[in-house]
Image 1: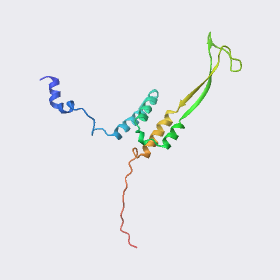
Image 2 (image 1 turned 180 degrees about the horizontal axis):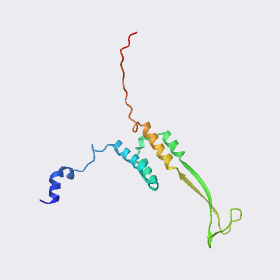
Image 3 (image 1 turned 90 degrees about the vertical axis):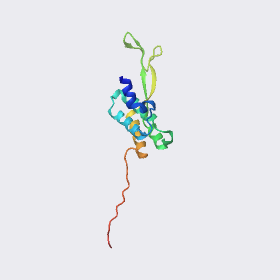
Length: 141
């Protein structure tokens, strides 16, 4: 009996019908994405937070999330110089040949985006399980 036949005999139904339905919940996948963001290298953080953000259902996005997300963006302007023989050409006061020119970029604070996503999930009660407990005491007055 070959190795393929042994695997097929043992796991036949699992292999023929591969599905994650019922085996991996949405909350589990969110938790895995959050863990990946918390344990990744610094250069991988942006892409992992982007994946976590793309996993948010559209119906869950509220005004508070959109407002918080807007606050994670900032605009930065700076001068970009052309160089000739390793020396910057021109100054902002006296440009030469189109150098320098001003560049404006939008910068995203990915740590703030991550915290915004965590706040959204917390509002949806996905991060902290809150159980209601009723306590009955026999107190006579």
